Image (cartoon, rainbow, N blue to C red):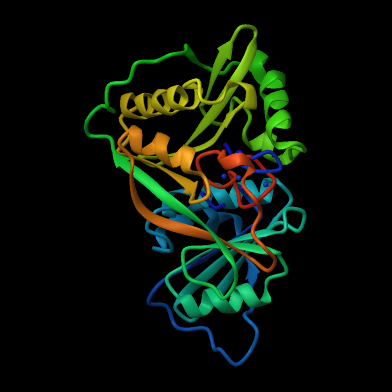
Amino acid sequence: MRGVRSLPVLPRRATRRALIFATLVLVAPMLSPVPSDRPVETEPIAPEELSRLGSFGLSDRFDPFLPKFAREALDSGGRVRAVRSPGGIAAVVLGDAEEQVASVFTRSPGLAARLFAELPEAAVYSEQPLPAPREVFGIFGAGLDSPPPVHAFRHAVRSAAPPDAESVRELLREVYGTVSDRWLRHASLEAEPCFVVEVGDRIAGAAWVSVAGRRARLHSLTVRPGYRRLGVGLDLLFARLLWAHEAGLDEVFSEISERNPVSRYLAESAGLLRVGEISLYSRAAPPTVRDGWATFGPPHRTGTSRPSSR
């Protein structure tokens, strides 16, 4: 499956998760408009403002995750800047020159388009339409009031432990090639719940859960090519759904590329329904999904070479 958490997106594979953070733009509604006759000006965001990013109504789906996305961008050496207006913060930009991918979350198509035109990154995730070729990621979600559908597990699924770290890195490198060390730090087994399936003495698949508030984001589902179509991905999906339900969370969601019918089929088999979409807009042709497999969602932070879900 592609990219361990590319978006923000969803949002966040190897240099994925390639799938999760380069640049994120967040725009709040009903603020005084930024004048359109000059370039959009941005200013640094103060550390004390980071925890408030989810309170501006910048995205229906990703609001709770915005403080996390911003901190991850800063921890990875990226930039976090705000577009301010007399009404407050009109937009937030998270940037990473190495990843060369941005994410734009906004209620304003016009402001999103202006930022897309001015940002230096080669690609931008956005929930708003932009004038560029795109790869569409459907957002699939489900409430957790009831347990997930009954599932007959074909493989034992367990929580990853610190001794698994190098085996998980080896899995990501095999599937995605070069893996961003910075992504790996944020996808560490201690940072977020990670689940693995072993077949024999090898880790055949791994997947993560990111939690913000009472919402869970599934991302970076990765299965070795030789173990696909054996139920590994479906078992990892149901294990995370069960974990989220037992943790008392309210909702779960994941981003899935429209080029990735396998992951879409798995999500729908588990009762997830399409509830929205986010797109990766590229100034060149969008990246190709390898043989129809991808992780649930773009990379963890925005990016296309990191494991992903936007």
